Amino acid sequence: MPGLPRLFAAFGALACGLAVALGAYASHGLEGEAAGRAGLAALFAFGHGLALQLLVREASGRLRLAAAGAMLAGLLLFAGSLCGAVFLGWPTRLAPAGGLLLIASWLMFAVDTLRR
Image (cartoon, rainbow, N blue to C red):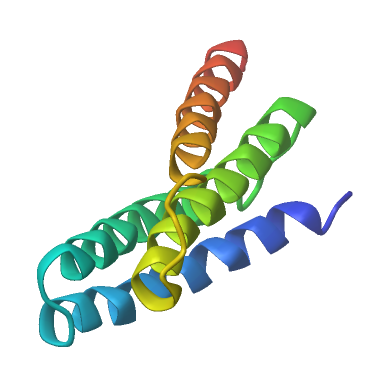
């Protein structure tokens, strides 16, 4: 799938932009636990969005693309779960699964890097 790396990189850039807005809202529009959750979601969205932007732009190989997919899914589950709790009152039960996917994605990137 030749366009998949660009799509992952575009989602990464989008995550970074949304993270800046979320971080500003967490700092100026929220208080207490909600501010903490939104701030953590913003931090993870920015860091992993930037990683997707840089690590996947010119990705080649199935392992790297699988790592990018795991990172994107983990980011959506982790940050999405925290944002769902802040804005919609949802439970954060998907956050741990998202965190595990983020950890797995970094391990996959490490293995792919050592194999090159």
